[in-house]
Structure formats: structure tokens, C-alpha cells
Image 1 (cartoon, protein in one colour):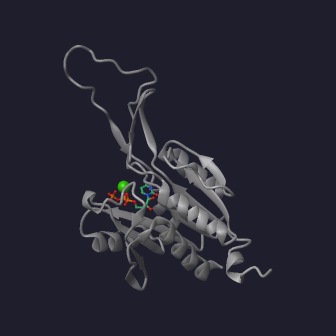
Image 2 (cartoon, protein in one colour):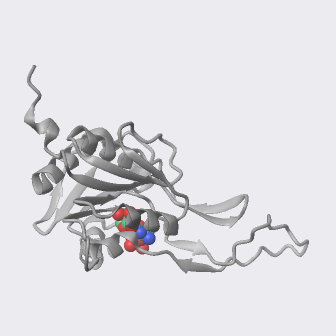
Length: 224
Ligand code: CTP
Ligand code: CA
């Protein structure tokens, strides 16, 4: 029985994968969240595992379960996700597939908020969350050799994603069109463009599992 070499190309490598949405509490029973099933992140973690990597899978409250054979770190908020990423360093690569809430509520209540009878809704005050992708990409020490971000856009996908890559300082951006008519959010397929220093490379529409395998292959070529 011959084990193909490709199966173990990431043996001894450590990869951090963030996945799922984050939830930002308003009060004990309410939160602000992003739409994300976590299925693309879970598929990427599984594909990296299949190539032999040790995977730290840092996940918000996703709808799909985490894959077997990875180290699962469950978090709720963006700040917790950032702390978990930091605690998982050093790593050879980081893939930030989470849909992180951009803002958190700073006047959240530890008791359930009640209607006060005035008919006026409460005013939520918000602050910007830490940008985990930009933070890890610009680390002076311990920066993973390869940092991969995602850009879910509804319009001008390549332009926004190319700008995002430069602004965040990551190596690659996996860009996808999540406008409702594509049916990609929550669905089994994805149409992505990989943007690197060499520019955009459009991949055909394929299952999220195949996107994950192809991305894991590329990561293995880079850090394997
Ligand atoms: N990201 C992150 N931390 C954040 C926000 C985003 O790590 N606080 C990561 C995501 O996981 C993704 C990438 O950054 O890999 C791009 O996320 P996106 O929401 O598209 O980018 P933003 O910079 O938040 O820009 P936008 O205003 O378009 O939402
Ligand atoms: Ca965002």
C-alpha cells in the first residue's frame, strides 16, 4: 500500500483557520451577527488536515459542525476571536475565513433590555472591532509566512478585493461575489477569484469542498 506523497505535504505545518460568524451581544438574549454558515471555513480546515497540517480551527457560532481531526477553539465575539488567534501563534499560515462583525455594541446591557413604553427604540452605541486579518498581516514578530484573507463582496468584486489585499497587508485574498442572486451564501457552491501579488486568477464555479481542496493545494505549494 502506497500512501501518495501529496497526502503528507503539510505534515509538521501549523495552520490557523478562522471560520463562521461572530456574535456581538446587545443584551443576554440579543446579538448582532453576520450571515455565515461556516461551511467554507470548515471545508478549508478539513482539506488542510487531509494534507497533514495541524489545524487550529477558531470558530464563531457557525451552523455547520467543525470537522474532525482539527483543534477546535469556539468563540463568540470578534475580540475573543482575535485573542484566540493570538494564543494559537506561531503558525506557518493563517486563513481568515470568518465573517467577523465589523462593530460591537459598547452599551450592551447585562439585563434584558425592556421597551420603556415611549415607542422609541434604544440607541445602540457601537465601536469598530479589531481587524484580525490586518493585525496578523502586520505583526512585526510571529507573522505567519502566508496570510490568506477573504473578501465577500456584492459589487465590483475584483476591485474591492484587490484594494482590500493591499490595505490589509495579507498575501492572498479569496474574493467571492455574495450578491443574493448568486445563491452562494449558505449554499454548497462557490465562485471565487484568488488574488495574489500576481493579480486575479478566476476559478470556475465548484463545490465549496473543491474550492477548499484547491486552496489547500496552493497553500501546500507555498509553505509545504
Ligand atoms: N476580517 C477580520 N477581522 C475583522 C473584519 C474582517 O479578520 N474585524 C477578515 C475576514 O475574515 C476576511 C477579511 O478580513 O478574511 C475581509 O473581511 P471583510 O468584511 O470583507 O473586510 P472589511 O475590512 O471588514 O471591509 P468591509 O467594510 O467591506 O466589510
Ligand atoms: Ca467587514
